[in-house]
Length: 425
Image 1 (cartoon, rainbow, N blue to C red):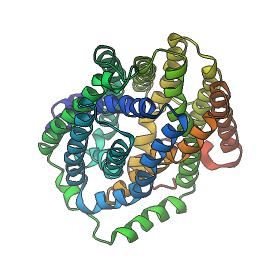
Image 2 (spheres, rainbow, N blue to C red):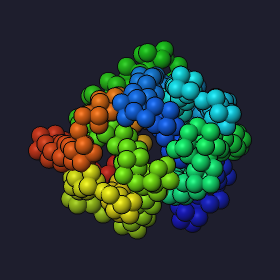
Image 3 (spheres, one colour):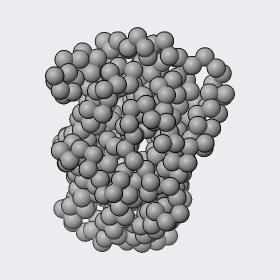
Image 4 (cartoon, rainbow, N blue to C red):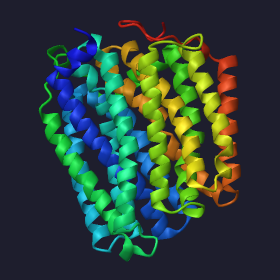
């Protein structure tokens, strides 16, 4: 029986897959609606950047501790709690927008609450699979889960765009923002449903007996020390963190501004993100068909992909039609999707399961937590320079960073991990 057939017969994977897809689909609605709501409430790119930063700072700080909490109390229990919290917060946010009483302060407070919850849900969710499926099925399970999530990144924005077009996106005033309120309500419902599917998952016996009992601060320190002692992990995490802080922060501000200033509102932003999701899905499909075929090795492949993404970012600032941005983001998504499964599997198989929550927390800190920290600066830059300069600067930075990483760091020596390999291998 091959891995795919075995996964289809695994109830744990079935429940995880169904709940993860439902929740990820709902997340796309909020991912588009929240920055758009802030833009409609303020009309200020600096305010948008500040909001992204306000959401990102607590998440970036706490996500490291979130990984240690996951290792101590189990991914399932932490993830279940965050789903209930997010359900409540999104219900309040939806009620505020639908009633026409949304203002910047309560929206910001609720956004910070969602960010705090994600500091624990991200390491819990990314370390859940090894606790629920057999080790020999991990790579196939990662591929299937990521492919389905990328499918939601295609379908979710398209559905959200339709909802905004029919219900209103606030462009004509907050009295015309019913579509935004319904988007938050949809995400609220998906969290409630995914909490029920998660309750059906039964962690493996080996995983349940492998909890960490040391204090949280000491556990976080042990995770950071593990990364620092491994030249490969240290180089990879520092490189990813730097790129996320600069390029990721620019994209979080520049894409909503592109949709607002040159295209056709929230629906255009949804289409841009949908194109990126479609590309990521195609890239993952290509990765599944090609297996572990690399350009020399995993590290060279990652750096080459980053260089190509940098080139594709250069003309983003020249976009004046939606289809132009969609084509560029489609290509960027293909490249990113091609390497995502390999990166996650490499990390998951390089560290002991008892440290997996902390390691994924550190990874998500550098990959997702750092980008909002630079968003305030990106918003400030956006108020001073054109969109063309903003996108071109991000693309050039990524090109130079990939080149320097190839020349001066161990990034170019990374190879696909084998089960049981040590982080330094």
